[in-house]
Length: 153
Image 1 (cartoon, one colour):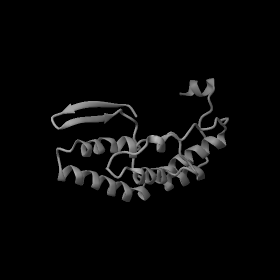
Image 2 (tube, rainbow, N blue to C red):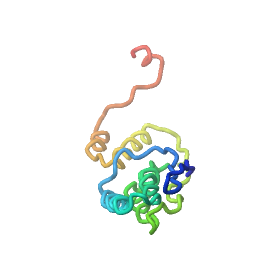
Image 3 (cartoon, rainbow, N blue to C red):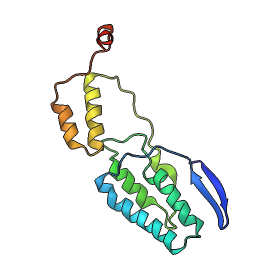
């Protein structure tokens, strides 16, 4: 992950490049995030001039809460976050960035069933079970892409 380096009176401090973050922390990953963030803030409070502690705080979001490229049945978002917090280095610095490189999603021809499945998976991964059930039980269909629909709009 590219970083910007700033020189402070007590040393160099690097800030990670901006990366999209997840919208919320899944319930199963909140405890590990809370523990790690408490450790990082505790180091800052105990020694405010330690640049490595501040660097850990700056890297927490982009490393732990970065939106993964793909996740699904085998790559649960909670498990990804828990693995990242467990891999956080002993010196309260981010470990290797390999935890976020998950490869590319296979190209699947888009059909109504795959669109429905994708919408349901998105809601389930976000932990919104009520919305996932609502999508499954709904008989509503998206409007067809054709000139008549365009004219109606």
